[in-house]
Amino acid sequence: TASKILVSACLLGHAVRYDGKGKPLAHPLLERWRQEGRVVTICPEMAAGMPVPRPPAEIENGMSGEDVLSGRARVMEITGGDVTAEFIAGAEKAVVFAQANGCRHALLIDGSPSCGSGFIYDGSFAGKKLAGNGVTAALMARAGIAVYSDRQIEELAKSLGF
Ligand code: SF4
Image (cartoon, rainbow, N blue to C red; front, side):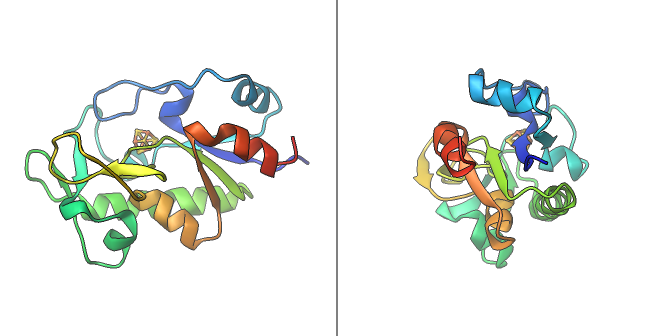
């Protein structure tokens, strides 16, 4: 059977983001994979029990998801709440879910402190981007799941043999 692809829930239009919205990716490849039944989806932050909407969160001090997993950085809400434990729990749930579905590849939305893989924000809540990954993307990489951002869907298709 065709290998399955884990896709960020918000990329499929599910209203799970901090702002109460989705961010649907309209792309023929994604539509094709959905029709083929290859797409499985999870929102790591919702899987950790976080509400919708919720305050925006960033990884502190220009650090990355890998730093969070290693205990060197926290994930902070703009309102000052420490949501590090929730972000790690969500990442763990997403990896377990991916493995249970046999996913070797993931298509995750970029820029998120959970799902980002190419860039994230620097922790200042000033819209400053930096290269790095979010907590879920980092844990997936550790687990050997190949992570592609929403802008890399063509590369994902190539690696899947399309
Ligand atoms: Fe989307 Fe991932 Fe954020 Fe959930 S945790 S809203 S799937 S970017």
